Each structure stands twice: as structure tokens, then as C-alpha cells.
Image (tube, rainbow, N blue to C red):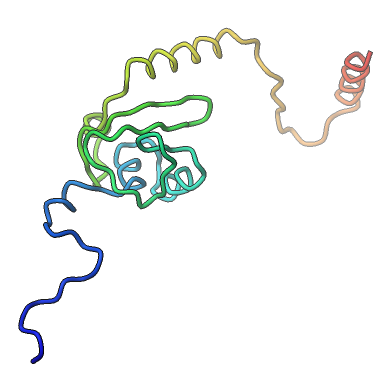
Length: 148
């Protein structure tokens, strides 16, 4: 035997408590119920929808308690502070204890939601098959009025 001491793998920390205090970003977002599947969380992080401490992050970014996360979901933007780490997806009441949302973020989201409620409804196409002759005429009239 050449070496009687157990070998350490490269890249591991000196103590295991450091690894216990950190968790993958995509797994935490899934556990905190921001995404229905972990694959959706990974795609959002890889697509640049998530920033950790002001920097774009990778799905494997190690989170720790106290980190700041900026998350864009549709038209809404959440600014979160990580309170606890968890890799298990539990009930929503438990998931809400994993983070704290900043008051500015809550206010901005509520303001945007109110604006969206007050906005006039947009055109909704109901998928009923091919448009009828009347539908085509109405559409042609609408386009002609827009061009004038």
C-alpha cells in the first residue's frame, strides 16, 4: 500500500457542513413551487429568467440561505430572499416558508396585476375550425379600416 490515508476527491470542500448549507438552484425553485417540474425550472434558469445575487445563474448554482433571487415568470417579476433550503417538494404552506418576497416586489406585482385587469380585453380566437364567410368578411373589413 502506497498511501494509508483515504484520498479526497478534487473539488470537494474541506467540511461537509458547507455542502449541507447549499442546494441546487433548479431543485430549490421546484421545491419552492415556482415551477411544476424540475425540467421547467432548469429551462427557465438556462433561459436567463433567473438571477442570483444580481448575476445570471446556471441550474446547478449552489444556493445558500440569504441569497437574493430575481425570477421572471411571464409578465411578473419576483425578488426573493432565500430563507431555508429544501430539495423536497412539499405542501404549498411549507414551500412558502423557504423564501421571503421583498415588499417592493409584492407592490410591483400587485400594481401590474391591477393594470392588466383594467386593460381592455384582447382579441381571443376561439378554435372552432375554419372561419365562416361572415367571419372572413368581418376580418377583411377590420383590416381595411386599420389600413386607412
